[in-house]
Length: 259
Image (cartoon, rainbow, N blue to C red; front, side, top):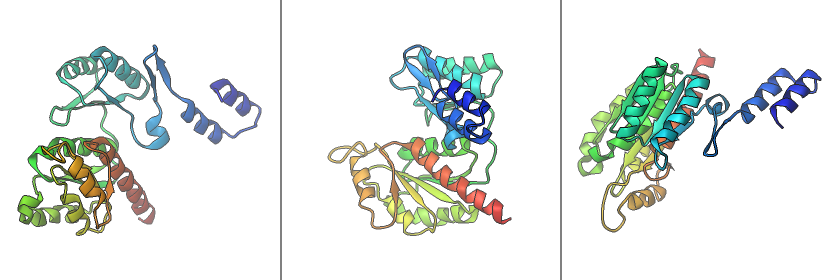
């Protein structure tokens, strides 16, 4: 059903205003030449922002898609951004008079206002220092979905004694969900899941080498966890952060209804 059909049905009282709004959200995208159909209402429809992945796109294509998001929603997220993307997107932010936020370690750029705080609380853990870029990606995405994020880094199983005092920070923060990024053998998410009473999302990271390298051993280890664990794909910090934020935001809504 296209826009004209929806509006005609609304005019003829065949559907309600609320139903028309829902259908318009489902149908709302903009076509950019023959390369992209930009989903400008994904946040309103699903609560999860659309992100432009810069890999396999030219810098000009990334900027063109970003421009559409800014013109429609005033904010855009770009993942897997390189140096050329940083420079071009910073210039775009300056042109639009919007705030530019970038993390070169996480390879993320955000242009526009900060997300409104939802009251959701997320914890993010990295097993090793090499796992921080993926953990940082999860952190930024959860923040861009309105959550407060508490991080603890470099607490992997090679020195498991480091984990326990740090885990107290997440308990004290009252986090609603925890993301754990771990490479090599990927043991840490299963351990954390056996110690806490909130959902844990494991992210296998493509650190490690030889047999089972590039995150494969970590992925299989997490999938075989005997503690209850949700697992996303290798290096999928965005997905983990968004999933944790969705859980946290639902928990925050529940707290607000009880207050």
